[in-house]
Amino acid sequence: MAFTAQDVKLLREKTNVGMMDCKKALAASDGDMDKAIEWLREKGLAASVKKAGRIAAEGMAYAAVIDGVGVAVEVNAETDFVGKNQMFVDFVKGVANTVAKENPVDLDNLMSDKYNGTALTVAEQRQELVLVIGENIQVRRFARFAEGVSVPYIHAGGKIGVLVNLAVEGEVTDAVREIGKDMAMQIAALNPRFLDKSDVTEDVLAEEKKVMLAQMDNDPKMANKPAQVKEKIVMGKLNKFYSENCLLQQEFVKDNTMTVGQYMNAGAKAAGVKITLRGAVRFEKGEGIEKKQSDFAAEIASMVKG
Image (cartoon, rainbow, N blue to C red; front, side, top):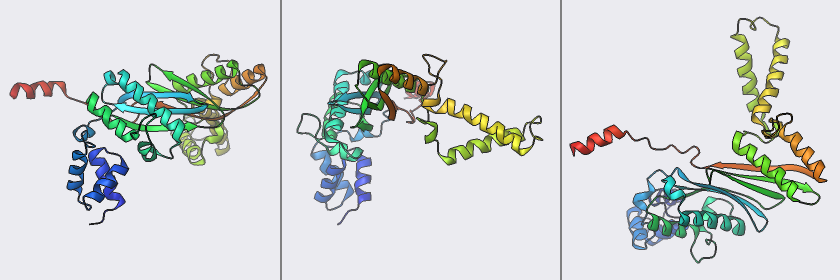
C-alpha cells in the first residue's frame, strides 16, 4: 500500500520522530500506520511517544556566534528545572553548532542533519535525551546569519535570546560589538514589531489609520473636525506608532535623548565606521505556546475520591 506526504506528517505528529525515519517506517510497513508506529517502537525511535503529547513550553532560547556565523535557537522542555539541566543546555548548544555548520533550510532539514560531532541525526540525539531526562523535548525554531557581524545576547539564563546582525564598513572593534549588544538588549526589553519604519507594511499602516480615524469619529470633541485636520492628526499619531513599534525609531533605553538609530549612527561615527542594521531575531522561550492550566483543587479532590 502506497503512502503520501500527509501520512508521513501524521506519523510524525503521532510519534514525534523525524521525517526521514517516518518515511522509512511507512515504507517498511507498506503504508500501514499502526505497523509503522510499531516498527518505530521496535527500533527504539518512538520510545518518547507517550511524552510527545505533553506541552513543552519551558526550555531555553540561545544565541551565539560560531566560527563567524550568527545562530539563534529555541529548544523546549516541559519544566524549567530541565531547562537548567547541563545535559539539556549542552544539547541546545549542540543544535546551535549544527545550524552553524550544516546551514539547514528548515526545521525538517535540521532534524535530519548529523548532530554536531556525532553519527546521530539531531532527531536521534533528541530522542536519546528524552530517554535520559524523561520529558518531551522539542527543537522549535532557529535563525542563522552567515554574512555581516552578528552580536548575540542572552537574557535571564535563556528566557530570551537575541541575535543582531550588522553590516559594518570599517574595522570591527569592541566598540562596534558594544553597539550591537546595546541594540540586542533593547530588542530583548521592548520587543519591537519591526526593525525600521520602512519595514511597516501598507496593510498594517492602513489598519492603524482606520483605528485612529474611528477613535476620532467616536470622540465628541473630534467628530466634527474637517477630514484634512483628522488626516494631519493621524500622521502625527503614526509617528508615535513608529516610535513605539520600530527599533530604530524607538527611544534608546540607555539614553532617552536619542533614538536607537541615532545611537547606532553616533556610535559608528565615534568608532570610525559605518553601521547598517541588516537583521535581528528575538526568541523568547515558550512564546505563543499555550501552557496547560491545571485546577489544583480539582486535582486534589479527584485524588481523595480515588
